[in-house]
Length: 153
Image 1 (cartoon, helix red, strand yellow):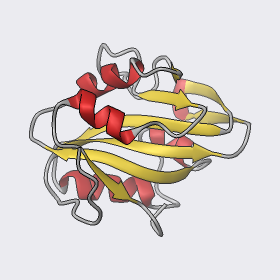
Image 2: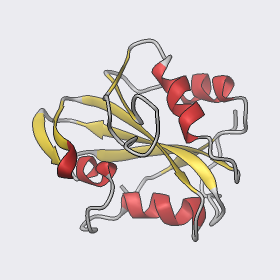
Image 3: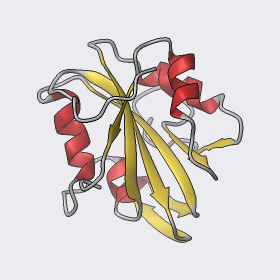
Image 4: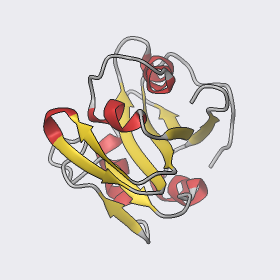
């Protein structure tokens, strides 16, 4: 497990965005429906294999006022981006990573969120406390870096 800041590149990869909610609210998630959010942390798993890679995709998640496109865009309006766990790779690891996170103790998957194009149960997971990046890195079996989003989220 590596903890490295500021080295995210415009290369393909997989990521987990860690969001923090400090409120209780019902949030409309486009055509998906309503999501009842509560104070705590949300881990969203995604991949960025196209042009611009991880840096472009994660930067988009950090940007306020963007066009709503993905489920996470709607949730992002009501949360603070805390950090991003990521790995540069051309392999699509998001489904494997979603499975790993679903196995964490004290996590609650949000069924159907962010996975309308795959067979995963969810790509969004709720934690009452901050999820453990080291535990995730150890289970993932690849080099997982942690990017600090200070000033961006």
